[in-house]
Length: 215
Image (cartoon, rainbow, N blue to C red; front, side, top):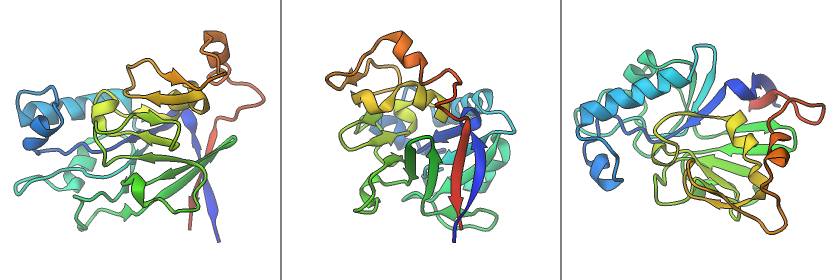
């Protein structure tokens, strides 16, 4: 049986693949940092300047990597928000950390599966998938596969709110490579700013509340 936690779309955030302490990720993914320490400091600063203490952050896997990397529990202790961790391919089980394989969120007509690797979604899943794992090897938004990639490389190395995602009118997007790029809209969908504001402004057709399924 499921119960549902109620969250606010404006205070619900997503981020994945920080890879704290991982020197080679700078080269692999062309991250704009000269050093690992600089990368770590920027990721922490960006997170804490975006996320308030009362917010909820869904972390979609891969906290850190490397023989000398600090554990996930260290990073969660210095980052703002109530952090819910989906286990990634580089996340080891450890005392003081709870990892989930996935989560499901509902808001308005949308249903979102939160999972690290988008290829591991159930074959019968018909909603959107919010994921990590792919870094900058796949788009931020792929409207064909209904996937939203929140790896740090495509979201400016900081968390993105659910409100920001919904304001993009994701159903109208065919492809959008990064959060800063111009989206390619599906044929017949308007890019008119007035139309997009309908997805952002509070009104009777849209709710501020997000429902999280928990067992």
